[in-house]
Image (cartoon, rainbow, N blue to C red; front, side, top):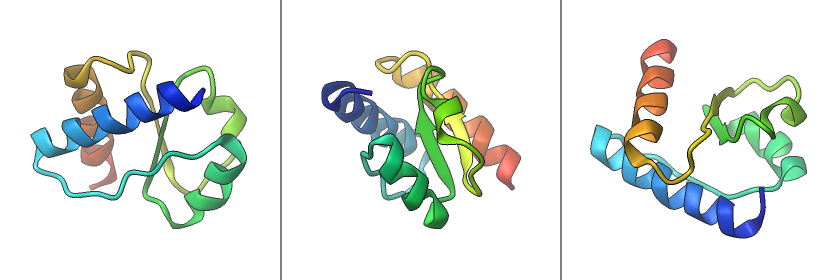
Length: 85
């Protein structure tokens, strides 16, 4: 994603996590950085367009198609968290 859309997604992921009562470190990264950073991450949140470019990661990939709808982001994150437990 571009820098602007990445920042928007980061802010909305943080809002969604707060609404779920989840504390997390959320970082913005380009694809190359995300691949390396994913080694220590539980989840990588990205768009459906970029998800295939991440390749095989240890971290669970959470696909978000609507970057501005916090409710939909919360639903996707809640599903991923439930699946992980």
